[in-house]
Length: 264
Length: 283
Image (cartoon, rainbow over all chains, first blue to last red; front, side, top):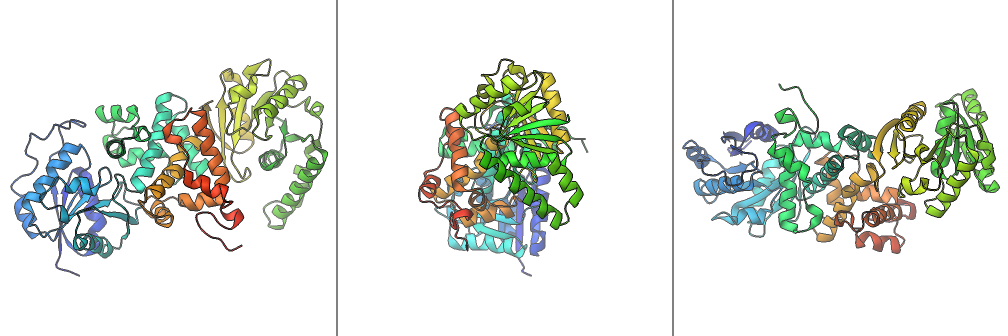
């Protein structure tokens, strides 16, 4: 049991889910929820003040801060910069690096050595392992502190080289992208695609049901980030995914994605 | 349906024969090579013996299933069947030869299905006079254990034929999904990044094979990691599927094979079956 305090900042249900994921650490956990974005893919939507007065005192007490926003990228950048401005320089900033490299995210800050990338994908129920990617400028002590936090919560970590998407998000989102392409082409139904992968390849979930659980915006963000970093056609997001984000068909959380859900 | 034909008694053909006979269908198993036909018959007899020994099947049921199979070297014995499933090696000339034979001997209303995984069903069926009755029935290996069958709609396949195919798949105790005749169908296409992007990550030095496998299992819940699975499937088989998809989509970069895997294949490091692939195995 330590006297450490973790500050988790982000949006909607995901802030709470990440805080719960880390609850077994025994750290004190403070959460700070942002106003939701006004538009799903409007990268210019940063005119509004992202962060209120209440963040300052929370930041002053944090041993580690963790941001949990992936998308839109401009919004993430505004959040990372705001946190960098209010956190004491010695406090590590854990950043969700599933779509952009830690090195890129750290380049937005005045203190890149404190920025440590982690990758986690919703839904968290089956997740036993967190990927950690120090950026080129990250200090060893900052990475070690973030790894200690996950270890204290009983979560395994795997260190990987800092490339957009790391391992899990990169592979699973490309699988989803391929499934989405088949839907777009009209050559198979979402239901049949999911059944095929579960029964024909022993997948734990069908890729499209998985996309709905992960959030179509999250999937799109990972693919858009991969394309931006790799600059290869191989990573081009299926246009259908972008349209679904624009139409607010974000998956389970919005009641409709590739499948429909009873709204809670 | 009561009576079907299966052409070819390799791994897939013999698996389809077994499942059909166990599900109570009469099966005409055509294998033009008499030696191979006899070997297949003996092999399936042993398979049923093992099932009986392990208590999975009663002796009587096994004997009844075996009695429902007619082993033959002659296409002419297919004259009464309601559907034929072709499972010969993946060479287009060979498939065309088989389908010409089927066109000549089968009832005009018999379904003519191919179990191809890498060729176009439409192209295979192009030698048949009535192409509305041609379709793909893509089974997965091992057939008795894998619940899925992809029903492939070729360009000319009629809705009535698809309807009858769904009925047949159900009779075989399998779950059907439907897909238009496109390279890789569903499973071999959508699952491609699981292997191919893992190879790319290894190539780029993001993580080693063991770390990638651990992450895919523990962060996402896959039962096996991509490198363990490629070693199990065989790197030669996996590389062939990826290469075929890449060619069929005219060089689409998403399907580009990895030279890392090609090197393993060339070196004979095919995975478990040779004792080494990405990992080493005790032989």
